[in-house]
Image 1 (tube, rainbow, N blue to C red):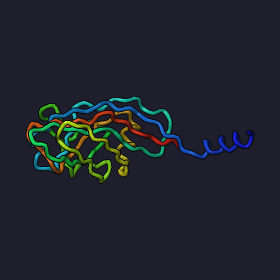
Image 2 (image 1 turned 90 degrees about the vertical axis):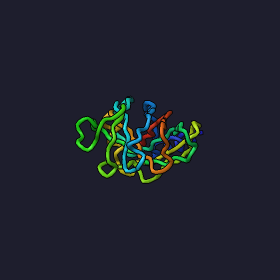
Image 3 (image 1 turned 180 degrees about the horizontal axis):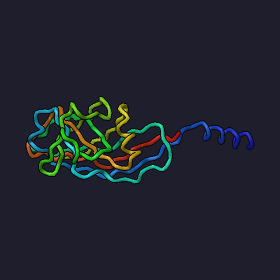
Image 4 (image 1 turned 45 degrees about the horizontal axis):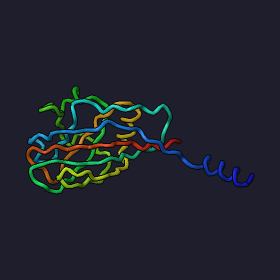
Length: 171
């Protein structure tokens, strides 16, 4: 029994615990100006969450993506995160309740695409933070989470990212 307790304590001490930071859902009516690609759409308001008070080494974002559109096409998009306000970014314009920024001036969270059908059904996704931008935003306690649709844009499309959790790995 004593060996079991010692072994259990060692396993716990050697592992890096992970905990989740819940992030506010995002729902965006995608403007027609982004239909040509190369444009990142951000909500006007930053996402809210409880900022971690401890140091962490890495972060992954998971949640559900969905879209409702006139055509039931497959949607593919990249996700972007930033900690700084878009109001003072000269590359971005505000239009119809969103910021639209050239993708060339933004940094993707990862090069992996999030893919789902525009039929309103929720599709789970997980993305690694290979750019460090998600970690930076989580550390700052403020995050604008945006997306660039690379395939499947439709007029009158609404994109939703829901049940968002940033899984942070503690030192």
